[in-house]
Image 1 (cartoon, rainbow, N blue to C red):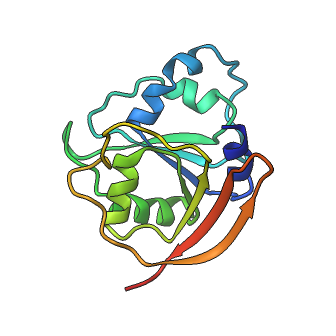
Image 2: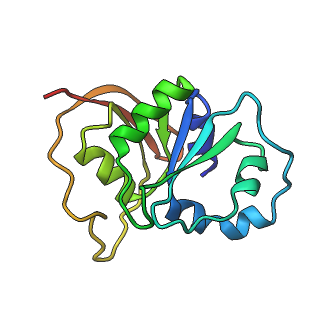
Length: 168
């Protein structure tokens, strides 16, 4: 995790986009961290929270990582968020063009299905995970053609790969 966040800090995102499940999974840790206040130069935190389950908005804003937070929701509780419209609004209203997704398979799959991903940055660990778990989401993400941008190996066997999602 430390390596991931150290590398993520190099991307200089305007927005950190996360799903509600990712935020809720960190609720216990968030309750026990110091709250220094918003990071004036930090990115905006945008949380896809269509079921309105996140409640720790002040703590998220004040934990020292983000300048402010915003909930992305549909018109009614449970209505899916129009991700393309939300990202467009963030670009127009907040001049937010670089978005780093820090989330699980459901949100990542939705973004891939909708063609909203320009680049993938992957940390490959030398571990095979077992189990029968499938890709999250209703339907699989489409097959994508990726163009390699860069690759870097670390002493512990982890490999950092960066790909551009090819157009078309």
